[in-house]
Image: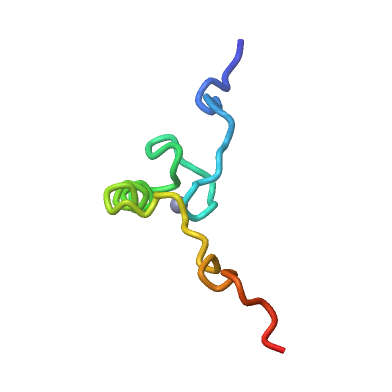
Length: 66
Ligand SMILES: [Zn+2]
C-alpha cells in the first residue's frame, strides 16, 4: 500500500514573477500574498504599459558631439 499521498506536486514549481522565488500553491503563481498584491497594484497603476524607449529623444538626429 502506498503511504505517501500527502506530498503531491499539482503543478510544476514556478518562479514568482515579482521576486523570482518559488511560488506557493495558495498564491500561485506568486510566492506570497504580498507579491500578488504588488503585481495587482502594478496593473492598476498602469505600470504594465508598453515601456517607452527613453533614449528615443536623444537618438533623434545629432549623433556625434565630436
Ligand atoms: Zn514573490
